[in-house]
Length: 149
Image (cartoon, rainbow, N blue to C red; front, side, top):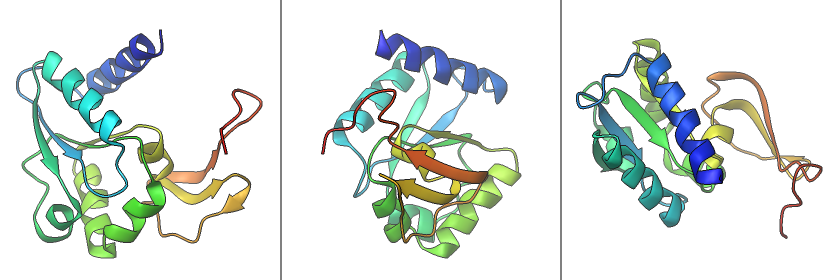
């Protein structure tokens, strides 16, 4: 059931970004902090949708342009590690990419990474997130499902 829910959400996001299946290039982050299982599952989903996927790392973001892609996707994982490994200049590239019409998909930790501030287990993390979401990302929400310690 969860897999179907994620597929529906991502399909709606792609539709909202006016992405044509078969013509989109996805930059899928797969460096330190990214959950290997989430990277694999996300890549399989994009492949299934007929989208071309390139796995990228922090060095790619920090040193190379992103303008050849339609979407950058950050999978579930450690958003603190994302913020540590991607330089401010790399974060600026991501913001510019989005401002220029590129899409962003954040799954779990990749969604937390978008906030102006990130709280995890009631404590603000000392990190420099993307800040493309004008607010605080916060979790887990134990009232929905207790997070294992």
